[in-house]
Length: 376
Ligand SMILES: Cc1ncc(COP(=O)(O)O)c(C=O)c1O
Image (cartoon, rainbow, N blue to C red; front, side, top):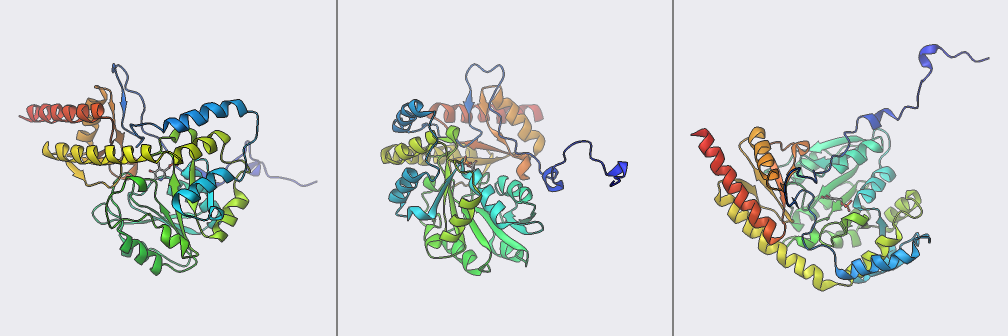
């Protein structure tokens, strides 16, 4: 009989130690107790909502809830391919781009391997790297912007992936295409460069590219995209990547066989068909992003210029940022605290409806006045 020392007996199942190193992702708040009307400006959702065509497709899908979806999401990959001019065979869809990020990490990072992301980069990268048993490596930014040289300085023999959000959430900063190309060119060919272009549709800068031409012409660059932002479909969870064939092959092996649900496929296809809706959303964002940036800066609150659908507001310190958050919350305006991103003195504001945007500026004005009276 095998004897087991009492100290070796586990009293309950234990996850891998790396799992317990993960700080669970905490989404922005979505309630403002006591406020008569709530404006959720904490999750970079679109104030325009989804295309009516997507709503209709989802309603029609309700008659087919008993059926498994097409595990290959063929119709959706074809629709994405047609919209963007990509080979559908090089597209993989998933339950939000979060899932795609996790799949990439799971496929390419083994125990002890390193994944790089930037100082204020999207938090899911760290979670995905740790979940895969890897080591998260942080590359410092310069002026809240990813810095190619600092990323390259972190590349070592164990590096397997570089995750880069372009534009980044929560800073809103971006790297011009020339810098992205330099990064891709300078990385060793065995390192996968993941360009997370969740906010690409919003970017109006002429020197920006989501990086798709790099994906078309290389073996180690992947672009991830989402239907959660400009398409207004965050609730049904839909994301995708455009990737080299080998990368698609790898993540297709490990993904759940029906990871993209039927409602998401139907709504995604319909949403892609409504170009006018996206054009409206781009125009709304361009107008109100500029207006918010101008009005908020005029109040003496520093903002980081943003290429996305949100703005990073800088306060005098963590205490003041918290006070502003409470003040706005009292008026039903929910912003995103970004302490978890190493920015405790900041709040992130999503561009909202005209009503919400005007209310935010009015509330910030009152807050600034209130603070200066309190100091006097
Ligand atoms: C940079 C970035 N990447 C990915 C995502 C995740 O998007 P999805 O809803 O498709 O999982 C977000 C969502 O906030 C994001 O900001």
